[in-house]
Image (cartoon, rainbow, N blue to C red; front, side, top):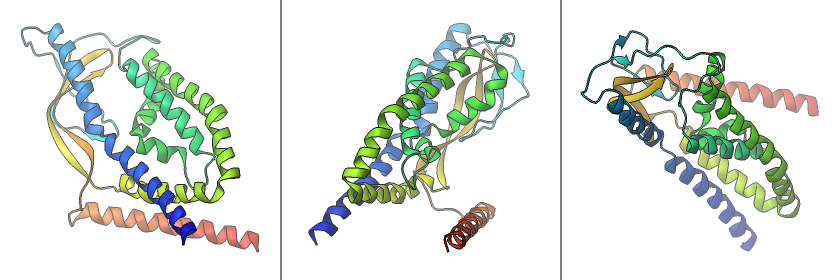
Length: 256
């Protein structure tokens, strides 16, 4: 009984850790902080509240469904290796931390680096940075550089610690991992509360812009409404289960 309680404690600890991280990292808060920062810069450029030229293009960022009008200041498109100020120093450092933790998760059974990035609210930022590599902006290169350095440091340090934990405290470590996977279901729940931001200030192509009535997804889970969204969610869930079933069957046949 004491052993079962001991392992249950680590399962619970893993669940609480995952849910806590997911709850603390709110995508809306990140968007709001950046928007407020860009708003101050925008007011310096247009102290009298002048409106900039409207742009018909509206490029969506993963995690944000944007509506309304994008209004950008008439700056020239930055050249190759230009610095646009898209990221702050805190975001660079956070990318390094995420890289270190994500690579350490790669050596854990049942845990993927992408799952860790989702829990830390950095997955879509990394994917967006990779997609923006073609622009050749220094901001993107530096951001991914910090992420890469974090991967190297995490691979050298955390991997050894995890290897030590698996050798010395295997049962407790595996119980903790089970808790992490169970708690991750909270973060992976696909139906999230949406908040409408009346005016979101963004930086794009070296200029500052405004997106009116931007729909920002939070980390608050909600029940889905009956409709296409629910049907699509169930369909993809069943497809994922089917794929995993095929993988397990193939692995079992090879083992036998």
